[in-house]
Amino acid sequence: MAHSLICSPHSTPIACQAAMSSAPRVALVTGANKGIGFAITRDLCRQFSGDVVLTARDEARGRAAVQQLQAEGLTPCFHQLDIEDLQSIRVLRDFLRKEYKGLDVLVNNAGVAFDTGDPTPLHIQAEVTMKTNFFGTQAVCTELLPLMKPQGRVVNVSSIMSFAALKSCSPELQQKFLNETITEEELGVLMKKFVDDIKNGVHKEEGWPDIKLVTYAVSKMGVTVLSRIHARNLSEQRRGDKILLNACCPGWVRTDMGGPKGIKSPEEAAEDPVYLALLPSDAERPHGDFLMEKKVEQWGLLSQFPSWVPF
Ligand code: NAP
Image 1 (cartoon, rainbow, N blue to C red):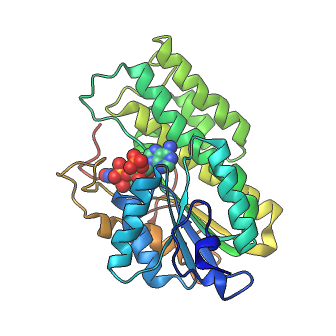
Image 2: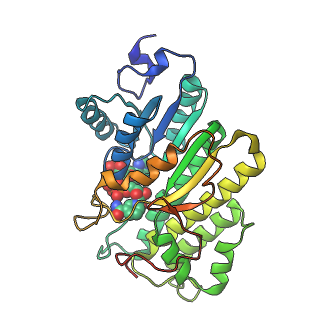
C-alpha cells in the first residue's frame, strides 16, 4: 500500500506503521497543531509504541505542525478534525476503523477560552465556549469511545477551573454535579441551561458561579463531570476491557490560551496527559479521576487552590 493512501484523504504521505501491520496501535490527539496538544503529540511520538495521529481543525496549520515534528525526526500522521463538526468526527472515526480497527489512546485536548478582558458579550462567550469545550468533546467521545480497544486510554484535558466553578455554584447545583448517578443527558441539559441562563441574564439567580472566566470554568466543569460519567459507563459496560479514562489539569501554561505569564511550558504541561495516556497495560487506576501534577484530586474536595486560579 502506498504511504500516501494510509491516512488519505486528510493525511500527510509519511511512513505510518499501518503499512506494516494489519491493525497497529494508534494514539490520537485533538487540537494538536499548537500549544499543549502539540507538546503531547511530540511526547507520544517519542514514547508511544504505535502510530500517532496529530489532528487539527485547520488542515494547513495541522500539516505545518506535522512538518515541524518531522524536522525533529518524528513521524506523526495527520488527520483533519474539527470537534464541532459531526461530519469531520465521523470521517475520522471511519478512517480509524478502516486503518486501525479501533483506537488505543484518545487525548481530548482541543479547547477554547476568552480572555478575562475580552469585550465579546458574555452570552456569545458562553455559547462558543460551551459548544467547543463541552459539546465538541462530548461529540468526539460519542463517536470514538466505542472504538476504544481493550486496555485503551482516554485523557480529557480539563482544568482546575472546573473545581472553581463547582465551589462557586449554589448548593443545589453542586449537589447535581457531585451526584454519582448523574447521566450524560442530565449533564447536557445543565450545560445548555447555563448558556440559556446567561442569555436571559439570570445565571446568578439560577445558582451559577459569579467568577472570572465563568463560561470557561463551567464548560470545564462539564468536561470533568462527563469524564466521571464515561468512566462509570466503561466500568459497567466494558469491565473486562480495562480501559482507563481520566481528566486532568495541565496547570497554567504559556500558550496562546494561557498567555505569556503562565507558570509552565507546554512541554511541562504535557506531562500529566502523557502519563495518563501511557498508563501501563496492567494498571487498574486511576480511572474516572481528575489529576493535577500526577496527583488525584477528589472531585469537589480540593482543599487549596493554586494561587494562579483567578477567582
Ligand atoms: P491553545 O494554544 O489555544 O490551543 C488550543 C488548540 O485547540 C488549538 O490547536 C486549536 O486549534 C484547537 N481547537 C479549538 N477549537 C477546536 C475545534 N473546534 N476543533 C479542533 N480543534 C480545536 O490552548 P492550550 O493552552 O494548548 O490548551 C489546550 C487544552 O488545555 C485546552 O483544552 C485548555 O482548555 C486546557 N488548559 C489550558 C490551560 C492553559 O493555561 N493554557 C490551563 C488549563 C487547561 P486552532 O489553532 O485551529 O485554533
